[in-house]
Length: 225
Image (tube, rainbow, N blue to C red; front, side, top):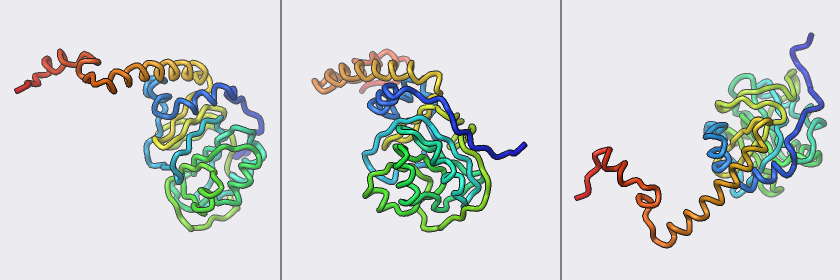
């Protein structure tokens, strides 16, 4: 049996749930899911202001080889986020504007890439969001087998095919498929609660009073002089 597969059909998070997650953003979603799912911050957006959420199409590649990203394109559906990792560390430029154009044509809303990206200016110009480990002109080959839509590990998180991915300027969060609907409701409730707090802070109320922190400060031995 081959160790390399392309799984063509995966279950995806509902579009309205993904829209809600995108509206709330990575930090709020992370808090709403019990402070779980945040990627370590090595991957950074190559653009500013992008905010996306989509179902994960996962790709495992050999370092310096983007063959399996090309193989993944036909499995992409509108609203997907392509999540790419390599079997050992890599900063080679595995994604450029041509491959991004292909992914977008099939509905991808962005790419999370635990490797390098190239054609950064062109990707920004076309408005295709990418979070990557590096920007590098180093080219790649198309020669080595890998897998599509299998569980992958990157930046401290396990991503299963179909999990919800939320990414913006703050970073990247993964929400397991089974929790996505519940998390978006919690995130929306959190946002509503923060709106009320924002009004109180804008009116001049102190955080130490609003959050009732003075007894804690006293308990911790903090003195006012």
